[in-house]
Length: 189
Image (cartoon, rainbow, N blue to C red):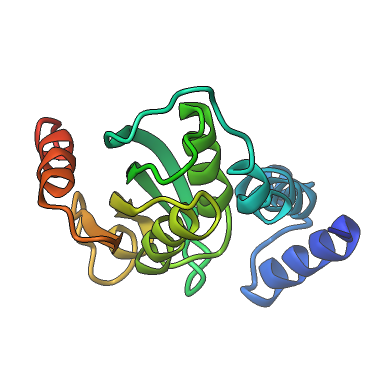
């Protein structure tokens, strides 16, 4: 992905000037434009450089047909509405079809999808969908538990409020659902 860090840095500085902040007089604001541009391009939005299909293309020699569940996976996403972070945990699970991927692939998938401008609700849909579409899972589940800066820091100031979403795709399998809920229920939410 082609990025113009100079243009992004100039835009951030223009934003700060438009808010009438003393970017020329405050030594702490010197270089902020480039720091913000790099943080977004190289870290916070690096998921755009990662392909979920490619991540899930690898497989292990395991031949299990039993549920595979990984989590909690630490995650940070950026809210597309306010460009503020949300932080928390993701748990992924699936019932294998013909293939099983390594557990690291599940963590990489969560990272690839969460390091984008994405709503939490859409993130769960994307992750569960990727496991069905790109891995061929018979069923998939995704539980996301995040604290959103846009909720905690803005006018609502709901400090400590957590958003929890659950997404399920594929075959209905009550044993899998129970195992998944037991996995997330056994942890502090």
